[in-house]
Amino acid sequence: MSIKRILLLFQAINFFVLLCLTSYIYYTSKRSTTQSVQEYQNLQNLRHNNITIILLWTGWFYGDWPVPLGGHQCDSLSKHCYFTIESKYYSTADAVVFHGSDLYRMEDAALPNQTSKPRHQRWVYYTMENPPISAYLGVQAKERDENKFDWIMSYAKDADVYVPYGQIIKGRYGNGYDSNINYAQGRPKMVAMVASRCYPSRMKMVAALQHYVDVDVYGECGTKCSRNRQCWNHLKQNYKFYLSFENEVCKDYITEKLYNNAFANYLIPIVISGANYSDIKVVPPHSVIDALQFKNVEELARYIKIVAEDNKLYNSYFQWRNRYDIKFIRMRDTLCTLCKKISTKPLRKPSRPYSNLRYILGNHDGNCKKFPEPSRLNAVKPNFTYFQ
Ligand SMILES: *[C@@H]1O[C@H](CO)[C@@H](O)[C@H](O)[C@H]1NC(C)=O
Ligand SMILES: *[C@@H]1O[C@H](CO)[C@@H](O)[C@H](O)[C@H]1NC(C)=O
Ligand SMILES: *[C@@H]1O[C@H](CO)[C@@H](O)[C@H](O)[C@H]1NC(C)=O
Ligand SMILES: *[C@@H]1O[C@H](CO)[C@@H](O)[C@H](O)[C@H]1NC(C)=O
Image 1 (cartoon, protein in one colour):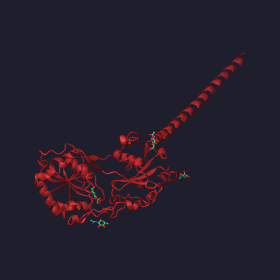
Image 2: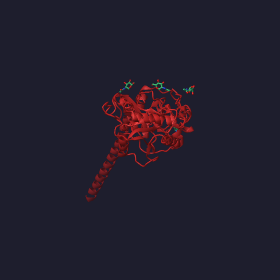
Image 3: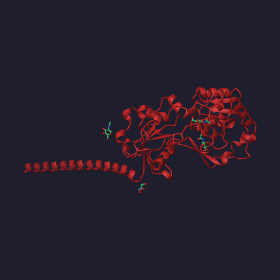
Image 4: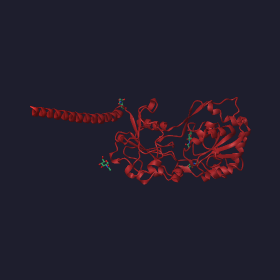
């Protein structure tokens, strides 16, 4: 009797353990299939709902991209954009973005497998640096980058995806222009500049100008004044002009030195760059003093003094603020522009990526002119070749 009972108990335990084991196996397997199905559906949904997937393959200056990831990043025109850094999206991504200076340091093996690149996918080479500075920083395109990239995304107007540092649009900038205000009033000082990279040709120009007019240099290249709001307020309240000298004279290369540093602080910009100042999408009309129009720095300084002493002339450089606004371009805008291009611009030639990337992005006369000598400013005629 007792043996029978023990046997029964043993059987019961056996059955219970078996039950637990089967249900454990059943539920765990079910959970993992559900997970992968969801993941699969997520990828499929993105494609079926016409969501453009942008995969950021490299980092951004060895760190995170200054942009929120995921969906719903762009305005109504391009709301179906999905930004990701996850390589599992590779086979479905519409564009794979490689940031030049990060790509440069990437091992060949860390690049995606080009053989399995989907037909619809664009590989995008992205850079906001000009050719001489790229060379100086040692981050140009390499030989292994040829025959890989379908698009170039940069500040140059002839890039496949043109992403300037700033854009001029119709509207009104800040408080606009008030004809009752004398913008020169209470600003005793003449010319200011903030620079952290002291490129010799640019500093030589500044030194030459200092012979004729007061120029105060802030930042690493001059008096210490860190790039904080307090420092900019000091400039805004005391100076009349700002030197927006780009580091090089390159096709379309015009940066925050104009938009953020000068315009945003109510300083009249004195500019040296390769930008087209007749293009009101780049620079508002009658808003800058273009140094390359003058014979030499002496002539330039003479004109700066004339403007400083003539209130009517000085204030005329602010009138554009009633008719134009500045769009400061952020990283998110840049990627949204790319997203829009994917649905509007066909591939240049499917499966025919750039085979001359190093030349197109290279340092030659078609891209950049030599920085001018102080004695021969207007000898530099920005006159560039466009590829498209
Ligand atoms: C996606 O786009 C294609 C072609 O532009 C169109 O035919 C299709 O209806 C769109 N699908 C959705 C879900 O919007
Ligand atoms: C790249 O993809 C192709 C086609 O899918 C495959 O045959 C090849 O083995 C892959 N190469 C590597 C290094 O993964
Ligand atoms: C500069 O811009 C103006 C206005 O958009 C245009 O007519 C002109 O052709 C441009 N010049 C160059 C050299 O691209
Ligand atoms: C601009 O460059 C082209 C070709 O490099 C040349 O033919 C033309 O004369 C140049 N124009 C000016 C104004 O220098």
